[in-house]
Image (cartoon, rainbow, N blue to C red; front, side, top):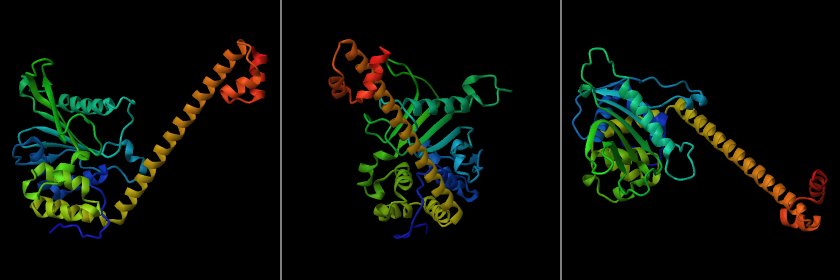
Length: 301
């Protein structure tokens, strides 16, 4: 039936590789059809995955995009991705790098449509870039789904919905988890599955969600199969270790940069203090530099 055993160790569908494996297996077409239908809010009859290949199990595969690029029966193009870990951003909390990434891939996909035989731009297929994100991108918005198209800056008049960016923030499901499963929308059920399937604390609720729809039962079976595959478990561990090492190296580099910046600042303060004829002892107390370091600076001056 696709239910997840209560004590089983399940790989997280919020991991981008696991996410892609679930949606691109040959037997997963009904799963993908239902997920896409829940996102674009209209029935989908058929779907074609255009990049079903999975990168090799080298930990450096993270350089590859683990998105799901598909086209549905009316020609609409949809690219789905799971943003499993934070990408590097400025410290302003606006996530402009992530947003820029979404726009870049959306425009690239939309403009990649064959131009031969197309005489009217208004007849190009619609294109969606859908990002399931494990962290909050829009803290000022309460909705867990935020969709953007081209609109007027002042009166919000729609210019075109030919291209749309959709963010599904899996970090905002607290209120949804308080609902009964019968009251959840299809997309809410998928969001709960992706976010909580691997967490034993929520296993009972996730199983209620899975039991509510046949396609979610199929997704549960696929997830169990992937989780029981020793090769996939080894790949998952290797990728997590690689990501952790990269984060640690970045944090170390940042710390070193901060220390270099702090030392440079102390040296500049010491030079200014020497010009003011302060004593070496007082400058040492002020800056934390050693007497020898200050004497060297005094000789340079």
